[in-house]
Length: 159
Image (cartoon, rainbow, N blue to C red):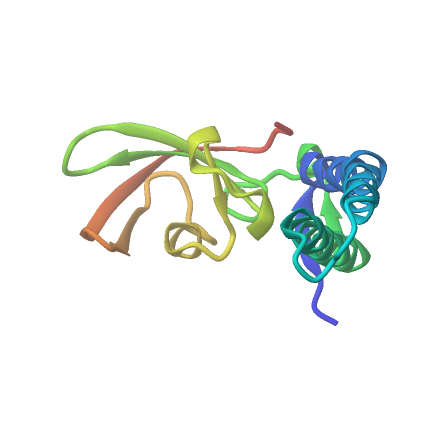
């Protein structure tokens, strides 16, 4: 079984989502199914079929999250250090074409959220950054064409 790397905050978010699905969504969907059953003929009951579909989706999501949780390898970013980019690092980059600076933390696949500055360990930019040091230039093939970034800073902190 392949381990799923994640930060401590990603682990907490995973636990919170599972708890929410089991304690809030599951009872809500069960109630919706019971109400729809009370309407009679199930073969032509759109509310019943919609509720059953929601239940199926929700149970599949719980199973997926529990699988990730069972394979989780929680990495405490605050205990990491070093001069090279690795999982959990927050990397400050400058785009060599536009001189725009951006900072990204390299996190597990399911934690990724570019708007919050978190990129997946399996993303092209993260793969290009792994093992590099401050001052190094990395070339990344993006859907919009090749990009060149210089690494300005590497830090390790929990988010």
